Image 1 (spheres, helix red, strand yellow):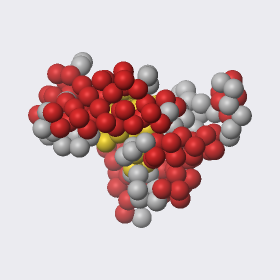
Image 2 (cartoon, helix red, strand yellow):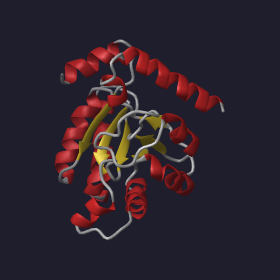
Image 3 (cartoon, helix red, strand yellow):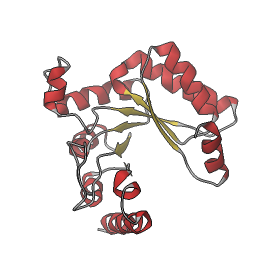
Image 4 (cartoon, one colour):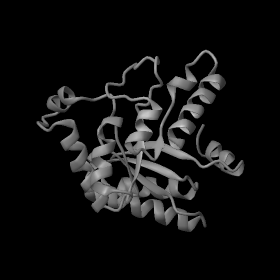
Length: 199
């Protein structure tokens, strides 16, 4: 729905997460990030595979756009390896790494480029938490409550399992949006998260 939807949500006091996964040459990412930063989102994603110069350009663009609009800081999040990919997919791209090794390499690149957080599958939470401790936000898609279909996701865990491993933010879409009763599904997931945080 575009920028108007972002601004409307912000006017209602909602923090907005723009999962746009910017991935292009550094000047293009810088300009796009600057425009997004002006909207005042709390977080914006960039593909860490774009490399250190591109990530740094995105970080700078988000900060500049937010400053121009008088907005608060916008966190730049680096997407490491998509949850729909596994080692077979990496090999098809000519990468001989194990997924965990590639995630860690991209995490290092992102950290050195000034990212605020990293997006990873649940299986890599512990690895990134051990390396970066509390210095970065760890954002985790591929969250599937017990009994939910995995769909196209290859690396998944339940909300409680992801929290136990050290996730800061969970990205949960289809288990709610495609549930027969989305409200009931959201409340059940929220209850599972509350119980995991209290454990």
